[in-house]
Amino acid sequence: MNWKTLRGFIKKEFRQSLRDPVMQRLIFLAPMLQLTVFGFALNNETRDIRMAIFSKPNDTVIQRFQDKALASGWFIKANVSENDPFMSIQSGEAEVAIVIKDKKVEAATLLEPVPIQILISAVNSLRAQAIESYVQAILNDTLTGNNSSQKLIQIETKILYNPRMETSYFLIPALIGIIICLITVLLTSMAFTREREAGTMETILSAPIQKWEIILGKAIPSTLLAAVNSFLTCSAGAVVFGIPFTGSLFLLSLVLATFIFTTVAIGIAISTISQTQQQAMMGSFLFLFPALLLSGLMFPVENMPPFMKVFSEINPMTHFNYIMRNIILKGGDLEFVLIHVGVILGIGIISFYLAFRNFKTTLN
Image 1 (spheres, rainbow, N blue to C red):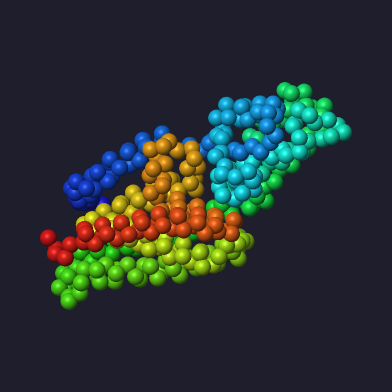
Image 2 (image 1 turned 90 degrees about the vertical axis):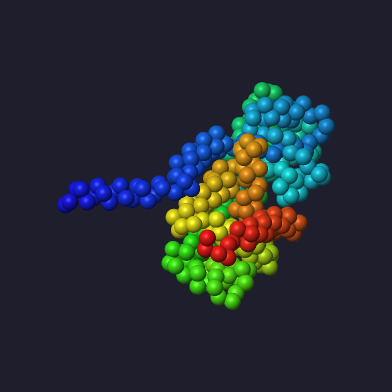
């Protein structure tokens, strides 16, 4: 082995990788920035649980329970628009509802028990398990402290939308979004850089074709491939994992089409600002990694600091997850779906505008 030749080759690779100032920032600055921001922002604890209580006025036991729950730091008071426990869960205004309708808990006796019903949304099955244990612990502590162990309190817990708390019902919709993102962003982010490095960009630019036609020509194949993959992944989710897909097929198709459009637009935008395939790959990674972390799949959005929630709300994958779980488990509330589809579509339109503006019809 010729060590001198090997050392020269290694030096050449280092120089080639680091000579570009853009790559220097991508390699060294971006990872440190991401580590710092995400290290402070991401928290896997279950906090800020939206809790609604439906009980008789001036029930001192339930008031004590609410005070303990809010003081624990796990719960926050839900703002409900109507006096219907189920609708507060259905609309997403509350994640857990405590219902005591017949009489005050403090009036419970062996002859006249008081039923306490706990309704928990299990759209996020991992979060629902923690909510159930937190509520039970605080409620038991409150009843024991009120000497209620001698009274008959009937506690009934109802898990809504995912009674068996199947983790796959929570994970599979997000995985569908990740697969679509990987296909569209990675393929389209290298659409123009590949042409530049292959030396065929000059031929394309000299052809009698408009700028928007070039961009569409690059976007449409990736869109069709992503559409086929989205159909296959949704079918696999239903057949292999038993995902119910209780909502409208039309709404599901609308969501998938909008999300594919947006991720393709993001990939094209990355491609238009990248000079090499290496830069395009790094740019894709810098989008995909934060998009995954801020989507609510691995870390609850509710736990993030306010400044990070802003980034989560402009992340198309976050809204895609919201919609897919709503359609799959709740049947798809039209207003809810259209609001989040509108956000995803807005992000896609802005991305396509940036791609069109940054695309240069000259090689210099």
